[in-house]
Amino acid sequence: MPQTRNTTYRRPREASFFDYSLLIAVIALCCFGLVMVYSSSAYSCAIDPKVNDPAYYLKRQGEFMLLGFVAMVVVSRIDYHWYSKLAALGYAAAFLLMVLVDFVPGFGKESHGKKRWFMIAGRTLFQPSELVKVVVILCLAVFLYHIGKNLDKKFGKALVLLAAIVVPIDALVIINNLSTGLIILGITFVMVFVASEKRMPFVVAVTLIAAVAFIATKGAKQLVDMGLLQFYQAERILVWQDPWAYPLDGGFQVIQGLYAIGSGGLFGKGLGNSIQKLSFIPESQNDMIFSIICEELGVFGAVSVILLFFFLIWRLVVIANNAPDLLGSLLVVGIMAHISLQVVLNIAVVTNSIPNTGVTLPFISYGGTSILFLMVEMGMALGVSSQIRVETDV
Image 1 (spheres, one colour):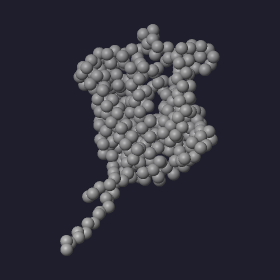
Image 2 (cartoon, rainbow, N blue to C red):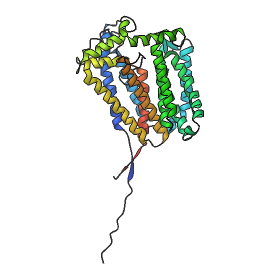
Image 3 (cartoon, rainbow, N blue to C red):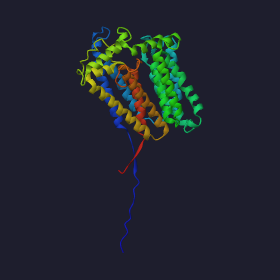
């Protein structure tokens, strides 16, 4: 008789996953950012008698980037369920810091007419509004995770509770930093949109926002007379509509940025060969650094940077789709929304597609607080990725 063969089936084993592609993208952006910060600031630092060091901004950015990298590694190794329990404490701390900066003399440092930096004993420490972004992402993820399927069943009540979380702290941010306040509202919109199955309320909201923007652009002066817009806000709209009407005032930076973009051509003038950074574009290492990228590296360099951001955002989408639970997914969605909004707004401002909002380009623009908290967010995303389980035959 033929012998029967016993066949055993092995269950596939599960292995942990860590998104090294995201890590490589972050490192690549940071290294490129250091190069561009040095290239865009070396001349202005060299001729500044107070600084007299071409590598001044490079060194400061490098220090914060190194600190941020350490923070990213530490946060990535922490179970995100643990630090989500600190959401309320983080919210309280961020709220207190914003109150101190906005209203208590001696704690807020004023620059360019705005108090955005927290100080102790005359020393500038950091920008609390960057902390607020991280805290809002964390608080919204925890709230939406706990409300779960009841979000759509009690949508109105949920919106009231969401407003109670976001509006008070965002109002404190908007007082001195409108652009960051709008980004926080954008993050909230995206996270709620992803968590909800409803679509009509969001369509209505987008329609209302578009209508308000249209009215503001068409009647900026009238809105100032009515007290609905500040003069400087209306001025930004007028400059955006015709920067050449204000060549020595509000339109100067925009015009010089457009000159830089237009003169770069396909492959640019070469790294370090920008003309507009030679005192034409004020503080070119900050919000306008993308114009220097276009001038020195051309369309090729600009598109390469944009594609790198697309890759980073795609990796965040992959992590969010495969996260072990809704909490992890929403955390990554909030981070993705933050970075996407800032990239789009910065490039739109530099190309004069929207009025100037003073938004930095993530990982590339100079800014110690910005890079530090961006790296913390990347640590959170990598921490979620490390808890994804994949099947393997090994």
